[in-house]
Image 1 (cartoon, rainbow, N blue to C red):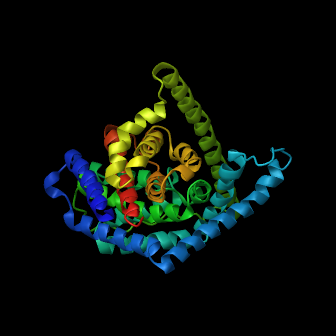
Image 2: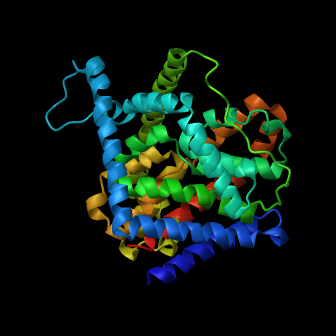
Image 3: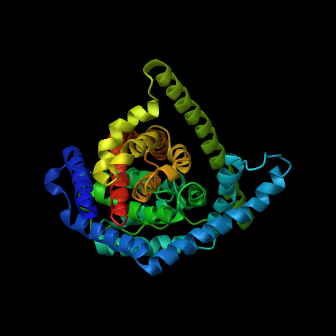
Length: 394
C-alpha cells in the first residue's frame, strides 16, 4: 500500500508540474530519475537501516545538546523571569537559541569549514545529476546558510542569470531551511524528520525545477565560490552573525504573534458565523493532497489543515500546532507532515526572496515578482514530494 501512495504522490507532483511547465518538451527526465533515485537511497539509509536510524538519533541529540548550551546565554539574560511550573516561553526556549546557532554558523564559515563542504558537495551533486554548477552550489549552500544571506554569496552572478536559472535558485531557497533554524524546529517536531527533510528538499527543489522550469545548463559555467569572510576581523564577523541571529529571532517572533493572532481571529469568527473553524475548513481543501501523499484517511483533515496553515502563515505556526496534536495523529501522518513542514514555502517567503533579489538587481527582482506564484507552487510541490517519500517507510 505504501508503494501505491508513493505512485499517487508522484503522479500528483508530476501532473501539476507538467501543467505549469514552461517547456514540456524539454522536461529533463534523466536528471529527474537520478535525483529521485538519490532521494530513495538517502531516505532508505536514514529511515530503514539501523545505522541510519542511529545516525539520525545522534544528530538530533547533538542539536538538543546545542540547545542546552544556548540556554546558558538565554538564562543569563532572562533568568530573572518567573515562569509558572510546567510552563514554557516559546520565545526563550525556541527562538532565542537561534542567536547561538547563528554564531556557530558564523565561526564555521569564517574558518572555511562551511565553504569547503558547500563547494565539494555542490560539485559532487552537479557531476551526478548534471544540474549545473551554480544550481548545485546554491542548492547546498541555501540549506546551510539560509536566505536572504545566501543570495549575497552569488550576488555577482545574479544580474547575469536568465529567467530559467533565476527560478531554480529561488525555488531552492524556498525549499531549504538554514542550519540556524534546525535546532528550533527539533523542539517542535521529531528531529529525524527534520534532518531527512533537509537532505530530501535539496533534491526535491531541483526535481521540480526539471519539470516546471526545464533548461540545459551551459558547459562553460564556473563553480561559484562562496564570498570570503576573512576580510573582516574575527570578532566583527562573529558579532555580525550574532546580531543577525537575534534579528531573525525577533522577526520570527513578530510574525508568529501576528499570524497566530490572525488565525485565532479567523477561527473564532468562522465558528461564530458557520459553526466550523477556519483551519478545519481549509483542511478540507488540502485533504485530497494529503490523502494522495499517503496520509491515513482518518488524519487527512488535520494534516490538510496544517499544510494550509504553513502555506498561509509559516512553518513555525504549523509546527506549533502539530506539536500539540501529535498524540492524536498516526505515526505515518506525523512522519509525512513533519517532513512536509520543513521548508520556507509560504507567501511571506516569496516577499523576502523578491526583496532580496531586487536589492541586488532591480531587473531580476522584477522577474522574480512576475513568476512569484509559480515559484510558491513549485516549492509547495517540492514539500509534497519530500513528505510522500518519507511516508514510504511508515
